[in-house]
Length: 106
Image (cartoon, rainbow, N blue to C red; front, side, top):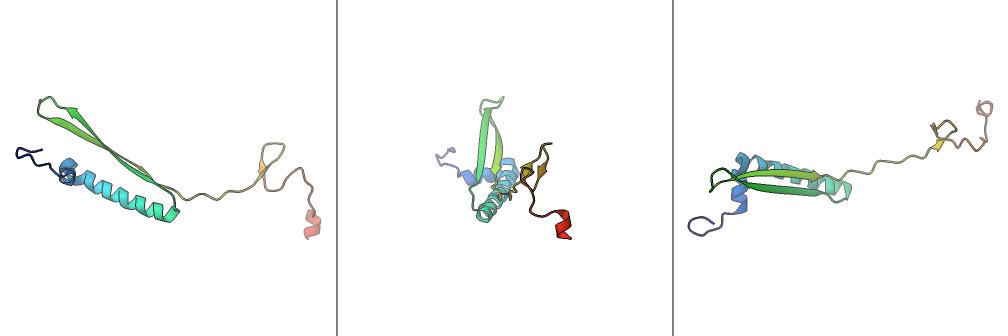
């Protein structure tokens, strides 16, 4: 509260902190997160952490912040392969014979 007992709005403080850069960065991250959530249909998370430490002066504090964004991603497609005796991944099951030979295909 200030000298008159009124609470300063958080948004007003955020505009002053780091010359407004943190405010702008939070807005950019929120927009990107919203777009990713709508695109993927998955949840995301934006965390804003503020840390205050006493400064050398008894009446001052040092303010630092951290922004952490967990953007959801689209599931990547999967493929099925088989392992041969040498540990190589191959498309056809090496334990099963083929119905066609190379000569049958010609």
